[in-house]
Length: 273
Image (cartoon, rainbow, N blue to C red):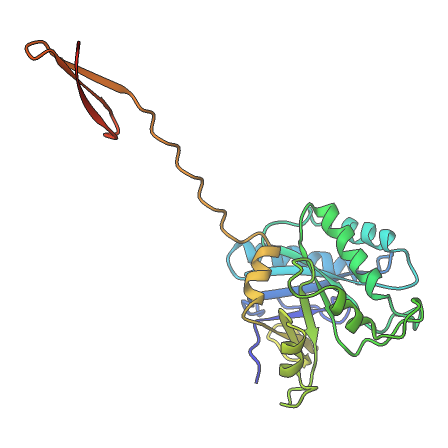
């Protein structure tokens, strides 16, 4: 079985008993979808603030919130709406990141966002936040969108144009097949070089009455999540060089003097002439 380093959940389906919730390394809740708040938002906001309290107490290593992107609204409007949600919790802080949830369904339209639309959302979010703070959630089950001119599956297109060497192309990959074949989760996580693997949407977790999503952070994903959440230690500044202070001693009987620095870098003996 895969490891479970953390869970994500939708506040519309859950009312967590926070006294029972485990100290997951990774914890994520849904914030927004499209451009409007729904009835889950007050609960999601309250849950997020409770998560933040627990994270500050050392109970969660990384925490975040996700936005479900829709094809029937402009990207910039969705970014503004997501940022508004973050502002309502005091802004994104150290230890926190955002997730773009890019899936093959929405409530209003069967069309899905194109690969370039998904990347534009991430770029606009990162520009607004002043750095790379997000990860993209998706799967190769994502079909082609009728909104572009090619016939390639949108996820395949996205990964080809956004390789894992791109710092803004972190991947949270969904595959619930635990088998060893080429379409199983382990094989596809390796194929697409994912950072996090969501391996179940039917998990049970203390404090939650309904199923939650279970996630395994991949070996390279630990460093990625630390970068996104600003948890990496900053390099120590280079020490300032010691100033050289001259120390001159004169030997009146021999007619010579010694010149050296206090750092002991050199000693020179000369005739006074």
